[in-house]
Image (tube, rainbow, N blue to C red; front, side, top):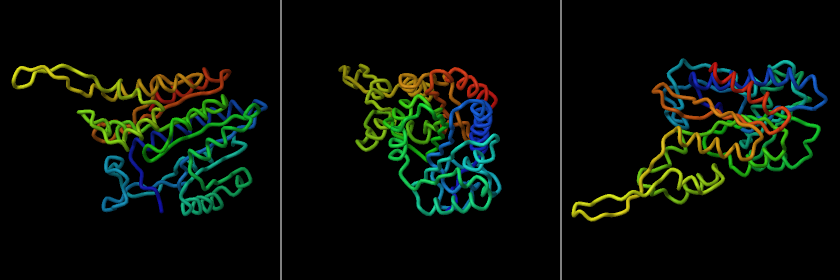
Length: 291
């Protein structure tokens, strides 16, 4: 099954990642470190621009009006980067997608096959285990590109603790988090748990909702819980959370918007290594400014 994900925002996201990888391998190839590219939601290696009549679309606003075509996904973009990485790790939970991904690699990138590992596991579980290894002689770029709110804060903490991984993360600003924040604060428990998982704290509620005093029809005062949050406030809250655990974080993540100018995702960047973090963020910021 081909992932049906498209639009100008998708192409910008992938171009941004590719440009960073090109700069990264140029720099790291001059160091003694072994360096890897890790794609945590690799899919099939391809993405397909929409079929207007398809019922397999994740969310309608993730799709833009474009002719149906196949374009390189993040896997292929990474494998085309020169100099190459020492190691590529592609993680995909769906077994059928893993099979298709392996076929794509064998057909188009056979010369890189010895350096590629395709992992058929849940991304949070695998990454948590991977990050526990000794990273002193290793470096990596990790791309977390989920379809929704699958990335847990506990996983992000594990990534930060390695102090060796540069992380690109697609944060579900408009398609996930904002939708769950109901105006009256009456959020069902399953959604609250999701928000707790993605932010790594329950403090989001006190930051996004305030109690105000209002008069009812009889002139009586009563407390009313009101939503006082917008895309910018959500963005700042999440970036501040990242800054608590990573050495340096891009202060202005790229907003990926749809054709109606509504933010769908934030493309966030965080660097874990204290020596290279300043340079890494500068490169990422420069790339995102040109998006």
